[in-house]
Image (cartoon, rainbow, N blue to C red; front, side, top):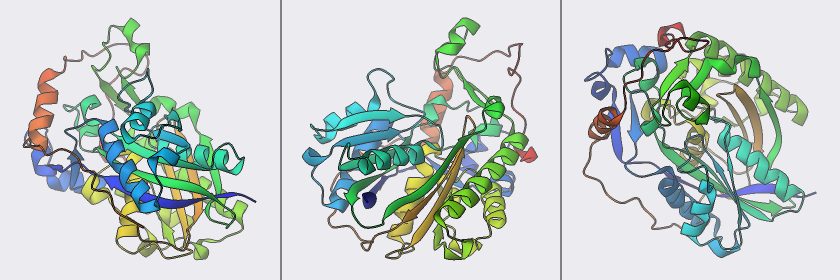
Length: 374
């Protein structure tokens, strides 16, 4: 039987840090308020596009795996903040890294996009369509953020990571996954102005406001991630005691705590990045995985559980068996260009350039509820 082992990994984090103190300069908030409700202290703001971050992460992952770009057969680009819709953003990454033989596709399931992309690549390898793939989780959400709405502005950040998956006869890579969608709650997390549906409502694309029902999202996210985790463990015949590491979507510290507690895995087995990076949507799981490897928390043969949820509300949990190698075969010198702009300066420029969004009547158009409901 053919499996799809993860053989390479690489992350690309923008250098500019947006702190809670920075946010308090233009929002009615404080470090204590944000930390107590989310566990977040800072997040990154990118001075380059999502595709540029993805190129760096992909090159680093390829070097780690010892795979040449010319030999890549598939690129799956997971994101909800694509540089372009037509052509797809994956094709831009393909051109930039020189993967001339690769098929390229974008996958958007919001925060679960990386894991759904991993499922896509794994299935295509298992069925013999391709022998290898680069799977990317990236988000450049800052340009789409409603920075005057503290309910969402304090939560999100930018970042990227990628993995290489390759065909193997060893029982490695994704052993099982549980995918789902709680579509009856899709209205609880919506970015208005990020799509053509809002044109007839008088909203220009890019002129965004966010619907965010924190209480309902918390309830559905915890329920969905726990059920998905339990289902994939049962499907693969393992128990919480068998799990060596949990790498969850880093949406909120409270959500992570609740999911881990109800899943029966001790907190010391959980990889956390939420304090330093916030919620990077599709990038949170691969960035946390890459950092877990850098910190030596992924051991040869480890069983890794990766649960997530996203707008839709999409939910999933993946069970991954790690291979023997936990260190890179080589390193890439790919890097982002330098910037002299601070994160706060970039945010203030985004705020200044956005059209004021007027309150609108109709279903779902009310302002989001406050984070304290989470």
